[in-house]
Structures are given as structure tokens and as C-alpha cells.
Image (cartoon, rainbow, N blue to C red; front, side, top):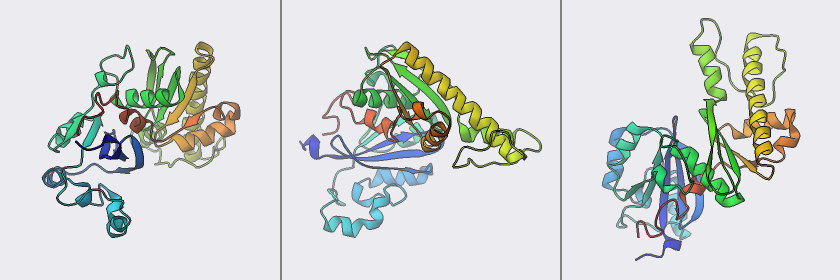
Length: 282
């Protein structure tokens, strides 16, 4: 049996828009990255020779530097190694089916996350992020996930699920305006808080979506602190950096108290409690 502290494995969170990957040694997160969805034939090829050593750069980008890393002893796998373990969580059922062909895969389900009282259709991504944040910083914990959808997910000091909310994220709101109306253009998110009272259509769309969303986030956070004065608030997801910038401009006192971390889902995934057994693969 291999030493779990030295075992290499991959985490995969299948999100609504992309694949989110992590490389672990034991419970230590080495690196994380995103890729597009993969065609079925590529996944099938991986199932035939899935060692860390020969994963293609589209999956494991560090293999672009394979020779140098091997020289430094950073690659524990070789072509003759057993399949690298894969811990998978997903919110996209048809993608879940696709990845079930991968050997040595462990699919996480909601009942494996140690938060009490969750409803059965809660997204596994929300549950893992909540567990990862609370396990690291302490409960009560509210997690704001700024992805394709913007979600709020909370648990109290007893690690019991309080509830949450879901709304369209920044990009999705702007995209919906441009695709579901006759004349509104495609608009990108600005790096800084835009002018509130806009003088053209593009800036008006930015202003409406951003100021309304930031005000909503402020309202949820303040309500959380009224209910849980000692409660923590963490923010994650692809738009987290932009949202924190916007909050810093509008509500700096709130922004200063936020815990910002892109890998909360993987923090939850690495927990032996979430994986059920520390010797799951080994």
C-alpha cells in the first residue's frame, strides 16, 4: 500500500461552463487550472492510458515541461505506473457519464460532504466549497461563488446547512441582455467599477448589472452578519476578483472582511471526510 501522504491524484470539478482541475499529493494541493470540456474520444483515450506522466497538455498543462520536471524528480509517475486516481464532482450529468469510463475514478456525491441538513438537489460544488471554507476558517460560514451562476451557501456553527440563493452571474446577465433583446450589444465586464449614470448603451448595461449585483451581495452579507455576528464570509469562482474590486470601490469595509480563495471546492474535495476514506484508492 502506498503512503497516502505521498500519493498523487487529480481532482476534477465539472462546472456549468468548464472543467476545473487540481493536482494533489496526499492532501496537499500542488496546482489548479481550468480547461474546456473534452470530446468523448479524448476521454476514451485517457481511459486507455491515464498515467500522470502521459496525460496530454490539454489536461495536465505541466506536461509541456515534462523533461525538466522529471529531471527535478517532480514526476512520480511513469508510463508503467498505475492509472492516476481521479476524484470527480459534477453539476453536469451528461459530463459525469462521460467521465465514468475513466479507470480508478471516485465520484463524490452530496451525502459524502459532512454538512448536516442539505436538501437533496443542492449542487455538489456549493456543498464542497462550503465545507472547504468552513473546515479551514471555521463556521458559521457563508460562501459566495461567483461563477456562471452567483450562489450564496451558508452553514451555522454546528455545521448545519442554513440555506442559500442562486441568481445569474455577471457574465450571464450581460450575455442574456445581448442575446434576448433586439438591439443591445455584446458587452464585456470592465476591470473597474463603471460610471453609475451611463451616457451610452454599453456602459448602461454594465452599470445596471454591476451596481444591482454588488448591492445584492452587500445585502446578503449584511443579513448574514445580523444572523451570525461572528460568521465568516468567503468568495470564490471565476468572477471573484472583479467582484472584490467592485466591492472595494463601493463598500470597502465589507470587502476588507471577505476571505478570497479560488480553490474552495478542492479544499472540500481533499478532506478525508468528504472522500469518505483516506485510503480510498490506495
